Image (cartoon, rainbow, N blue to C red; front, side):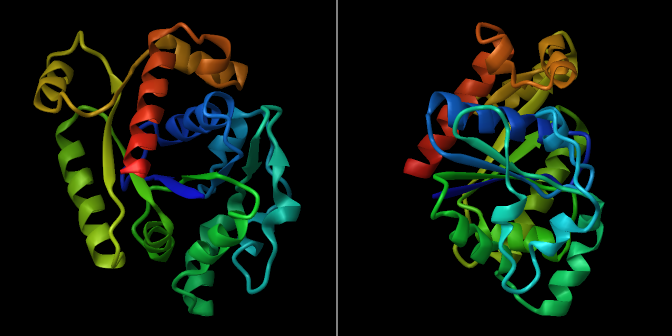
Length: 242
């Protein structure tokens, strides 16, 4: 199994949209048994698949000693794709991890889940704490969504330093230009400066995915946005193979 973390220290960058759509490509196109694990208390990944959070406390309990996440995993309705949903109890998961003193608790849970899944996609909250450190220790590749803005270079640098600080075997980073609108000068300049980075366009069809609670590749497979998500998924698989 490979662990794919979609992570940024900055919120509002399209992280959850990336996670949900990549999970669909993993399951529906690559036909891999996939688990989308929502680690963000906002529970956006679950919402994008039409799921309401369960009573608060369940998501945090997964990190307790000897807890089994299997009972909390829910099918999404997409073949080979399951969801481990979030709830507001994850606001305190950093404190729990600090108290139990298990530096690789999330990595251990991922290893246990590898008995059932080929791909584990982590939708991570925009934090710099023990949870983000554990995500980095568990990840095989880190996807960093970066909207074209002056703050993006700083966010990428912070993620790079976080990986260097917490991972002995440092996972590769794959930056992604998200919400790209080539009608804007700043966006065009960002694209010219980083032509090799995968890019996801800012498009109404992506917003429609949140309304329909379906992946873009599912309801608009011929759209430029769906093709962009597919190209990003191919780049991730190549990173993992390399």
